[in-house]
Length: 323
Ligand code: PBG
Image 1 (cartoon, rainbow, N blue to C red):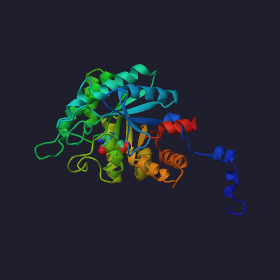
Image 2 (cartoon, rainbow, N blue to C red):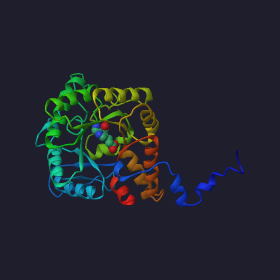
Image 3 (cartoon, rainbow, N blue to C red):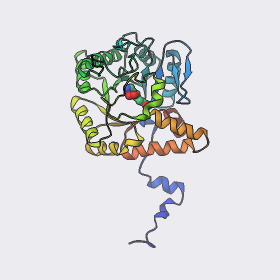
Image 4 (tube, helix red, strand yellow):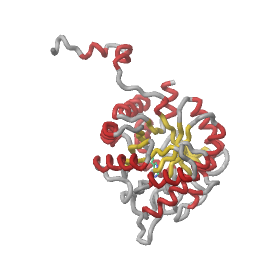
């Protein structure tokens, strides 16, 4: 049967009909809000390339998290901007470090907001790379694992519910799982940035986290744009014990999200990154597109591709809109 018996437009005639046959749903339950924490008190320093986002001192962060919980968003992911940076990223592992302090404060001030901590060294190293450099100036994988495990452990001790390694070192998920289990943190979840591509879409984040590499780039550890390699990364992370896997960025890599969804039966997260946010904001500021509508279209695309969890700087806006 075809036209004229078949008329696809019948089910598009009004919003109620469209709502009845809609296959994809976005819920506040899907959202994670990324937040940046810095030293000080009463600080809300705007991030220029990410309008509406701030580097927050812990007291301000706590207020924000209370509001996030009130909106029904299940989780936040925290990034720290430390007091001092050095070649080893030493501040990343301090019990009294910026993120560790923030985790404690947020856990205390909220009821059951899930706190995710980003585990990486790029915010803490003076060279801005995600690991420890060897004499040749390359990121040393195995030496970095030790520091990442110590960092993850310090976050767990502070009360993090989920640790999220974003460094892309080989073997880090298994290494961190081992360290957590040995220290008695069997229930701390690992959300692995499994397929993290070397992407120009991270530009605004690097302003926000003050983590731009001082020399070279991240292509020696973040991924080139191969799909098969991405699936292999996901598979390895699951084998090493990742509870949740992630594909990042979102928009330009939705084919990877779909393939990972079809191949693996674990919760799948996608990171709608800073560059995706900034370009929509910039166009909206010029009046060139309707921000709210575009955001929903982008997030529905991530859902349709197969994402269960979406990390997005629009989480609070979207929660209010779905409200
Ligand atoms: C840390 C990290 C980055 C992002 C999340 N964790 C930056 C990078 O790898 O350069 C990017 C997030 C975003 O762009 O929104 N390694």
